[in-house]
Each structure stands twice: as structure tokens, then as C-alpha cells.
Amino acid sequence: MLTSEPGSHMSIHRFYSRALKNFRSLYIYLPPSYGFEPDRRYPVLYMHDGQNIFDGSRSYSGDGWEIHQTADELIAAGLMEEILIVGIAHQNERRLSEYAHMDGAYQGSSVKGRGLQYESFLLNDVKPFIEANFRVLPGKENTGLMGSSMGGLVSFNIGLRHPEVFGKLGVLSPSFWWNPGKTLKQIKRLPNSKMPTRMWMDMGEQEGQLSQDFSMMVKQLRKKGISESENMACWLVPEGSHSEKAWMSRVHCPLLYLFGETGKPEQLMIDDLPLVKIKERKRQMLITAVYNTGFCHTPYPVRYISSRPDILSVTDEGVFMPHQSGEAVITVLWDKLEVSQNYQVKLI
Image 1 (cartoon, rainbow, N blue to C red):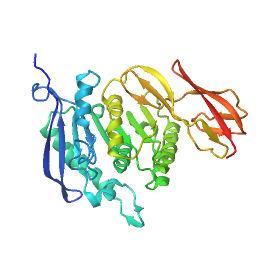
Image 2 (cartoon, rainbow, N blue to C red):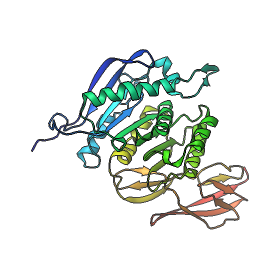
Image 3 (cartoon, one colour):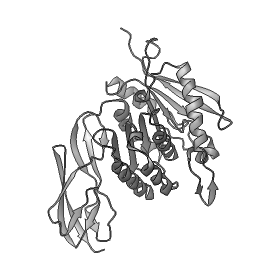
Image 4 (cartoon, rainbow, N blue to C red):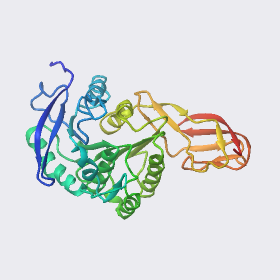
């Protein structure tokens, strides 16, 4: 029996885009058994911002996701199937334009969206090249797409436009601030049959307005009938920030959800300040379900029970509704688990 070794990765430089008429690099992770099992084929995950997803030496921030190490660890632990990961490099100053399906603005300057051309590049250049030159499995059930920030937005848009191609979506800290009205209309127009098979979405608590746009989009997806018990998992990450280090710290969750075993839930956690101000009517409770594999997500739907609903109640979406000053204990129940926390409601 052949012994698996940690996966390797390779680079392909000056890969040409016919739609965008420019060159870029592809960074490819090969799973541990790729060199030992020549007849075996593997699922494939395509990722944007390819400079950032491995060791970070090419990243503008100097930090990378180290996704190859995370994949190696999950595979060695038997928690995730072996996959290829294809990192598609961004084009620096053209990044915003290529990752936007709609026109928008950034720092006072208008930006022409070239997302349709980038989508064509992915579908007609990158994907056929990978399938012709590497042993990957066909079909949407074996094909994923993932990215963060604007890379999360373009993953979301391409995935919703082509669910017959990409059955697995990883949408991390998506930039829904980019023309959110048109994105909402796009979701509303989609028939339920065009929804993705399996989708991971997350957002950090410390990402400001992004988290509000994120919650709005998640709510709309729920209205479209996407079930979080079957084909969507979301996580509002306590203290999560908008950075490569933050995405590195939690990328195991989308990998487990899309290509592995999430395991069994063991614990519910509340990560909230115990003080609620009367004026705070958009603040969302931060509830995390922690699994025995290390997988985490925000459970939904959950049941909220207030000891004093006249003082503090919580909507079905997990939003605080403070009514008057006082104290209340909020208990959260989900999947035979429960957790409680005492809150002080004040007029300040």
C-alpha cells in the first residue's frame, strides 16, 4: 500500500485570458496521493486571489491562507476528501473591475465591472485547461468555487449564475457593499431551481457595514428557500476581521462543509457583550455552534427564550429588541444544545 505524503503545489505562469486579453499565474495544489495513484481523479476547488491562498510570499500583505497546510491536516485526519485547489491570480489594479459583475465606485472613482469577462475566462480558459491537464472529476458535485472580499462577491455571482457548473460555493467576507441593490434584485429574480447545491458564507463581527449587508443577503437567500439544514451554512464570526490571517484561521470550516465531514455539534457559545443599549435595534446575537471536528457555524433556525420579554426579546433572525431598562436572561436552544447569558439593558 502506498503511503500518502503531504500535497505539493506548482505554478503556471503567463496563462492567457482570451476574454480579458491579459496574462496571469495559476497556483495549483495537488493532493497527497496524486503522484501515487495515476488512475485516480479528484474534486477541484477554484479560488480567486491566487497570490494569497498559499504561503503569502506573493500576497500584498505578506500573509497567506496556508490553505495547503490546512488541507493536508484535514486529509491526514480523515475529515476531508483529497482535492485539487487551483488559485487564479488577480491582476492588481484591475482586480476590482474583474471581480465586479456590475459597475460601481471605489474611493471616489467609478469602476467598470468586467465580471462577465472574468467569468468567461474562468469557464472557457481556466476550467477546460485544468480538466485537460489534471485528473479532476467532472460534474457540479465535484467542482467548487471560493474567495474572500471581492473574491467572495465574484464567487457568489458566478455561482448563482452557473449552479450547473459550480455545485459548491465558499463565500468569505463577501463585498456586498458593491452595488447591493442590484445584487438583491438578482437574488430575487432567480428561480429556486437555480440555487447552489451547497454554499458556505461567513462574515467577521469586526467588518462593520459589511456584516449588515451580509445579514441582509442571508435573509434574502432564506426567503428563496435555501435550507441551512441541507445546503447552506453561515457563520457570523466573533471578533473576525477582514484580513488574510482571519480567513486562514477559519478556512477549515468551508473546506469541511464543502468537501469533508463536519462531525457532530458539541457546544453552543454566546460571544456578546452583556450590555444592550435601548437604541441598539440592529445588533445581532453572536451564537456559534462548535463541532467535534473544529467546524463552526451560526446555527439557524434556533429558539430564543427571554426571562423578561418586556425588557429584552430576540427576533427569529437573532436580532436584539430592547424595550426598557432592566435585566433579562436569554436562552438559546438548538439541536438538543442550549446556552444562556444574562443581559443588562440600559438607556445609554
